[in-house]
Image (spheres, rainbow, N blue to C red):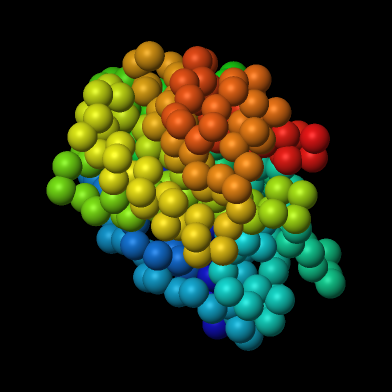
Length: 306
């Protein structure tokens, strides 16, 4: 039975690319593995997969009686259902450690870099396995996506070095042009239902015992979302009403390098506690904030404890 390699719910490009690459690497190391996702891929990811000749992985949502490798997350709220009824054999990630635990030792690669794809590149190097050109391509795109073309505070020298090396393997001569292609696809919102936009890149977190959802839409120009903000605000209110204390939607302007945050919360004062910006629930602008992982989640965790 193949080991299933899976990223977080609401899969993004890093989750899917890393799953594909880790499945390839483990298979070549003699442990048959298969990449899966927990749901449909987003438009940016679909663009990347098509560009490098991959079909979207099969959707699987239950880990019962299966061997599992987690990529790009270690939080139970984001992971595959019934993980405790399967066997977790490895983790590859670049986030804080979550609340997933195991009864047995496991292979674990968790590095403080901007993308799981950077970690996977180093795994290939460590095991002396050659990276196929098409896998190098999707990993390259994952790093560009997660680091917002190196503009995010999460970006490290290791991410930049990995992109340079992967581009040579993949035959990509202009990585920034490829990045802009990706983000134009990612920015396309017209005709997409508000709920799909909220959940395009969305994660639930436990903040001091409260369930908090944080979604993010990255666009090349925030004005692209002007006609959608009212519907997005109404939708996050609905998502909050489904059993959450708060839902925040980050509307990130890649070129201006900042984020407008839409708010639906039982206690909007947590925004001021977290970011120093007062609000009664109306949107706030967070200059220089681009990373949910490094700038938003840690700030909210402190705010919810205050």
